[in-house]
Amino acid sequence: MKIHEYQAKEILRQYNIPLPHGEVAESPEKAKEIASSLRTTVVVKAQVHAGGRGKGGGIRLAETPKEAYDAAKAIIGMKLVTHQTGPEGKIVKKVLVEQATDIKQELYLSLLVDRSRNKECLVYMASQAGGMDIEDVASTSPEKIIKAAISPATGYSPFHARKLFYGLGLDKSLSTQFSNIIKALYQIFVAKDASLIEINPLVITQDGNLIALDTKITFDDDGIYRHPEIKEMRDINEEDPLEVEAVNTGVNYIKLDGEVGCMVNGAGLAMTTMDLIKLAGGEPANFLDVGGGASAERVEKAFRILTSDPKVKAILVNIFGGILRCDRVANGLIEAASKIDKKLPMVVRLQGTNVEEGRKLLQNSNLKFEVAEELYEAARKAVELSRSTIP
Ligand code: GDP
Ligand code: MN
Image (cartoon, rainbow, N blue to C red; front, top):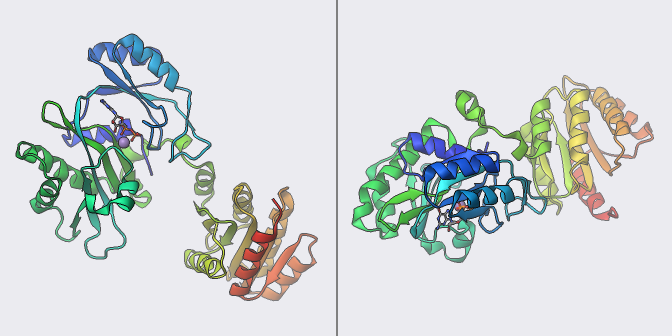
C-alpha cells in the first residue's frame, strides 16, 4: 500500500527526521492561509501516488501568499502526467504547502527489501545523484549507488550509517544528523512493516543541515492489519480500480503488462500457469487467483476484471476442480461469459472431479471456448490466440 507524501512526512516527523514545515490544503484559500502563517517562500506540491511531479508541473515555488493561492489553484484539479502515472495521468485533489528550502546538494536515500539476497534482505541505498530517477542512475552509472545491507537477525548497527556516510563522502559536520536519519529509517521500517522508504531528495541545505525534502513509503499489504493508523491513510482514488474491485470480492489480482489474461484457482497453480505462458512465448496480463472456492460470483467478477483490461487479447482459464466439481465450474464460466459483452478468445483447461462433464458443457455451449486437456497445450493456444486477434 502506498500513501501520500504529506502522510509519509507525518510518520518521519514522529521519528525526528528533519523536514520542512508545512501543511496539506484542499483549496487555494487554505494554501494561501498556510503560506501566510509560514511567512516565507513556499513550495506547493501536488499530492498523488506517483513520483516525477517536478517534471510534470506538479511542484511550484511561491514567494507570496497570493502566489501560493495561484499555484494551488493551478495544481488542484489538474491532470498530472508523470512517467509513473502513465498517459492517463492523475487528478490532483490536495497540495502540500511547505517552507521552501535553499538547496546546496540533493542526495538519494532509501531502505528497501531486496528479494535477490537471502540472508541480508534489507538494503540501504544512497547516492550523490539525488533528485533524479534512481532507476536511471542505477542503469547508467551503478557505481554511484552505495549500498549497505542489514541482516534481519542482527538489525541495524552504526556500521551501516558509517558505510553510507563515507561512501557519500559527506562533510564530518553532518555525521550525527546523518546517522540519526539512517537509524530512524530502520526503526520506521520495522515498526510499520514497510517495504520501501525513500527520501529523494535528502537535501544538504545552504546553512549546512540535512532535511528530507521528499519522501515515499510503501507498506507490506500483509502487515497493514497490525497498523490501523496506516490503514486509515489509504486513498482508494489513487489505486488501480481493477485491483480495488478484486480485493473487495476476495479475488487475488495483480495487474501485469502482457496480453494473456489468466484465471486460475490457487496461487501455486497461478504461478505455474504464468510460467507456461512465458514458456510458450507469451506474456501474462495478470496474476489472478480466484481462490479455492471459486464460486460462480467470483468467476464472473474475475471475468469482468480480465475483460476490462484493454491489453488482454485472450483469456486462459486453468481450474482444478476438487471440492468444487468441474461441471459446476463449467456452468459458472458459461454463465459469466454469456453475461459479458466483450468477447475474447478463451482457452479453458479443467482437471479434477467430473472433468468429462465439464468439458462437454463447454464444448456444447454456443460460446466459443477452446477446451484443452494439458496445461502447456492450453498455454500455447492462448498465446497463439492473443496474437491472432485483430484489434
Ligand atoms: P518529485 O518530482 O515528485 O520527486 O518531487 P520532489 O519533491 O522530489 O521535487 C522535485 C524537485 O523539485 C527536487 O528534486 C528539487 O530540485 C525541487 N524542489 C522541491 N522542493 C524544493 C524546495 O523547497 N526548494 C527548491 N529550491 N527546490 C525544490
Ligand atoms: Mn522526489
